[in-house]
Length: 140
Image (cartoon, rainbow, N blue to C red; front, side, top):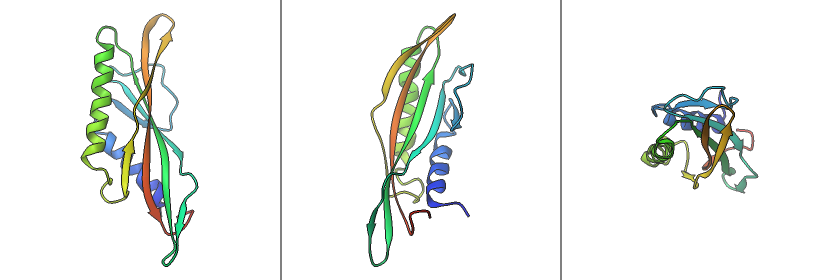
């Protein structure tokens, strides 16, 4: 039986799947970036939970990361911005991931240009997504 953590991460991945970009989970950066872009979900860290008693519950603020990469010649900045906006729209449409989370909160993208020898540079960003959820145990 999957843990609450795995259910939340799987639901986040499922929310991102309909986007035009290729969406992967915990994969290495491929040699070629699809024309629509690439999103890699990194599981991140659940952090130290806060506990409440009676009934005993563990409240996590899990920090997952989305690595967003676009490689396009002209219009790269626009394609990158469109992909970031699409991610925001998808996450905002259901901030509880179908009731699995109390709340999800994406942070601002930390973007960078990555040079590639003999090809157009990559426009990349890391978006931290804080997943607030509650479990019945620290390993549940």
